[in-house]
Amino acid sequence: MRHFEFTVDRAHAKAVNQTLTELRRMQVSAVVFAVILAVGAGFLILLGHTWSVILGVVLIAGAVSSLWLAFWLPRKMGSVEDMYRKSPLVPAVVSELHPRAMTLLALVDVAKPDTDGSAYALVTRNIPLLPGQKQRVGDKVPSVALLGDRGTRSTATTWQMVSPMPIAWGTKDVAVRARAVEAIDKVEWNFLASKIKESVTVQNTPDQRVLLEIGELPKEMR
Image 1 (cartoon, rainbow, N blue to C red):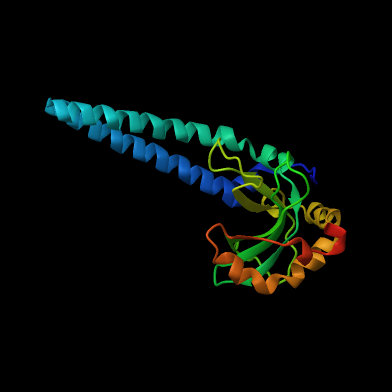
Image 2 (image 1 turned 90 degrees about the horizontal axis):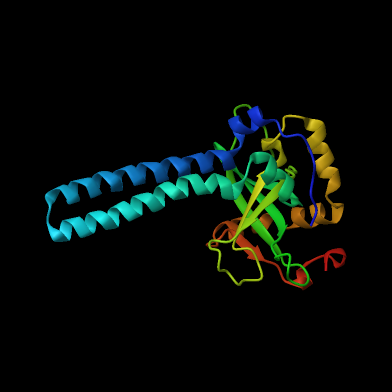
């Protein structure tokens, strides 16, 4: 697994990193939902009926679970430095341009560490264009791949959740981004460029990823 070391600009990441934005949004949603459940539980308990008290207790349990989720999410993800340091460096390119967003197409090995061999997949992610940002289809966007499972009991040999996170969301230094591009094998960049036309197909799959057959890969990656 290939990693890339660089100094994360925390202020820049806080301002532009959409993964952090999505994490904060989920936390806020979890807290708001917990408050709604708690208010509903209080109302039901005050009614004083057996059924309403039982239902109120159920809502309290739900509120506690939702509040726990709000605090557990950032612990599971770790700091932005942790995410960049622990996640593998992967090639990603701009595959589609939209009025205020673009689609990234990434090439990611989704095989878990305790499995034999690799399992490459094409993965897409839609991200907003920053003010003044100029991009073209085919532009290289070196990224790290955030990998995880939906639950702790998964027995799958590949990661269930994969999300590319651009190095550019962690630093404004163009030299660092150029170094990340160079750290990725040209074979991978060339192969990914040849798959840009498949971006729409990948985008329309439930998990926004398509596993590749070994025969599709360049011999250097088999």
